[in-house]
Length: 511
Image (cartoon, rainbow, N blue to C red):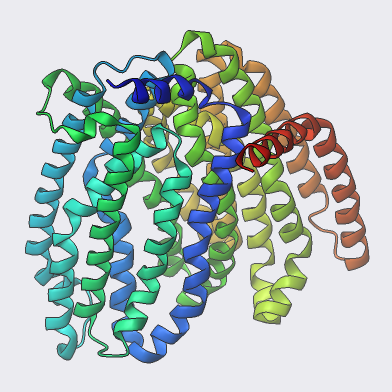
């Protein structure tokens, strides 16, 4: 290992510092939001130019880029954890063997997935999707091209995992923003020449290929072992597959529980009820972009902190700050949506939606707040090498959740569906926090604080549920806002001052 690279590893002892977490969160958030802003302006133009059916196929292709990455079997996340853990311990001797073992495995899985996708493209278009005859050939060819890109997509997730372990979120974002923008702008550009999905998909694949090359070259600056290819080291297969396998279970089960509710509504109630439920649900789910950005940064940070016994106190501090931050981030969004639900729905979607979906919004707001308290134990358990606890927790929730969905939807309509979703958040939060509480005594004070604060917020929401007078609702919202600001000043004044001081110091050093 070169002296230059060794110095970079030594500097990574600060991977879990508050300043780095704040800065990396901003970068990560920017990388998630920027492509969405591009989509807001381009999607209407694509719908008009391509037509609804062709655009529907394109939207499935976009979804496929994300979901096909499941073929990596969680190895990208496993790679992030193993590298970050060794950076925390300053043990870099086996880094090259770990990295190349993971990358070769991911490449192999990518080719298996590509072959599976090519063979399944025809049956998918002919039998599963209701595609008109004039689009069948175009659809099959587009899905074949998408499938062939799977090794590129999976390798990219591995290289991003290396950069995340080194906390190089700025590098990731600088590539992610233009790549995400081209995902939506590319089809708009090709539309000027042809509405063909084949051309649009080809541009998407070329963009992903260029991004992989840029990511790889960037990662070589921080991980010198990438410059010299190595073979597969069997000693690292077990930790990679053990972690990645359980993570794959979570990645399959969790989306299933997210989307299964709308199928119950469609089967038990009606498709109109699906619209009443999914429209506010999908909008409120966008709030989770902020905690997702924070969690993406916390995973390598907790892995690095857990990798060094000397950093145990830093891990406790990071847990405390993260739990409080996630709860405080969700509160203003959920609080405003909860108290203004009937008015916002009436202005946005009309009186009919306000009548049917107000209680849905309120249940979901409570669930989002409760779910924010589950995110820190979720990421801690995965970062310390126990993704099996998370996966088993999700598997244990499936049957009770399905039972709640059936009975509550049948007897209480979409309000019952939203209540079942929130009750699942309660089970998830209680279970994950209980695991942390009993397995990691050092986090008990933080767990007590998080659950206590969440209980108080939930009781406040529930107590004001039936307040119909809009004046009283807005007065109560303003009162809670004042309390929120005062509490934020108490809990975060020191952290904010520290982050601002670091920002000023870094700005001055650059000047």
